[in-house]
Image 1 (spheres, helix red, strand yellow):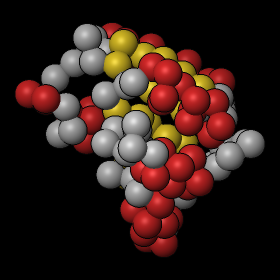
Image 2: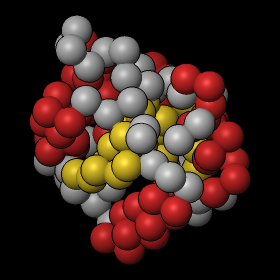
Image 3: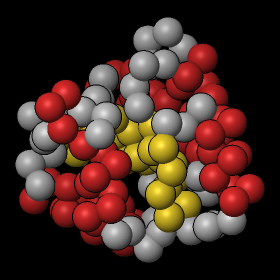
Length: 124
């Protein structure tokens, strides 16, 4: 089963996304801030990370930079999730090392398409 790490500080968003991903057959682990997300990425070895950008402790941009700088986690695809839909926000996410970008509120079909393009054989 494909493991996805969801790094999200908003409890309602985290719960909704976790339930929806589990229904799609994914194993979901979570972290509530960027520092915990970095730690979980190292210990849980997910196949993909969904990273909120507006996180406490360490924001999503910095957490992604640290993950991409660490040989143990640099190959894990990171999809940025943000409520900010400006072109500069997308550029900042890619500059930080994110592999893709999606906006909130989450469109599950669109997000699943993005997730699957990074997974072997595109599935859960």
